[in-house]
Each structure stands twice: as C-alpha cells, then as structure tokens.
Image: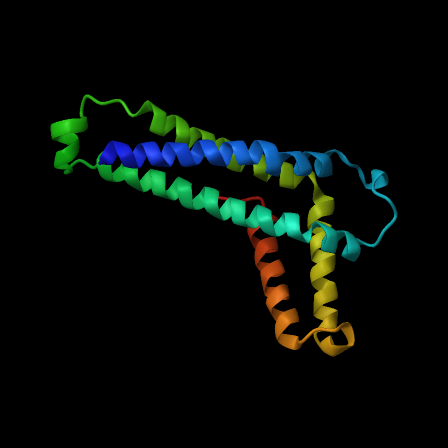
Length: 171
C-alpha cells in the first residue's frame, strides 16, 4: 500500500514535469527573453488582459506543484518517523530514492518558475496594470457591460494570483 502511494506521487511528479516543459516554461521563456523594447507599443492593461489566462493557469499549476510537494514530504516524514513501526519492521532496508528524486524534481520546477517569473518583470507590471484597470471599473461596472460582483470576483482572483506568483517565493 505504501509503495503504491509513492508510485502514484512519483507518477504525478513526472506528469507535472512534462506539463511544465511543454506548456508552462516555453511562454515564460519568451516573456523573459523579451526586453522592454521588443514589446510592441501597447498599453500594459491590454497586455495584462491578454496574459491573464496564462497567468491564472500558472497559478493553478503552482498550487498543484505545492500541494504535491507537501503531500510527498508528509508521506516521507510519516514513514521515517522514529516511532513508526512500519519503518522499523519493513522499510528500514528499503531505499526510496525515486521518491527523493521526485521531490528534487518538484523543487527544481518551482525554483525554475520563480527564476522565470523574476526574469520577466513586464509580466508582473502588466498584471498590476490590469488590476488597476479593474479597480477603476468598480464604481461604474455597468458602463463596461459587467456587474460589480463579476468585477470584484475577477479582481480578487487577479490580486490573489499576483500575490502568489509575483513575490519570488512560490513555495
């Protein structure tokens, strides 16, 4: 049973790593490579609106990576606890290198994301500008074809994603 749990967690890490390599890292690498002069002249709010789906997907990805990291750490900690009889009787001679490798892969993914987000300050500036635009919409949301509740919900989501992703501490 215990090995099945670790196998499943390691498979989840592999799937997360593959998703990061194919869907998460490439757009962030492009954003990190672009200098301020490489971006066409357009308003930061419009750029933030265009980047918002990627930004919110990134937030979900980071939450999943953090939850998986914490789960793997808790599983390993409970197994290696000094009073754990299962460890003493069964797992003392078992090496769980694959589980520790998976934990290292998760840390590498999170650190890489932190570095990429730090290397693209225009992303954070665009999202902040979009959040300011949403705040400016709050007094008269009907003017923009929306309700106060919808604008407030979107603003809360954008602010939460910004706090979670733009501070340099993803884990």
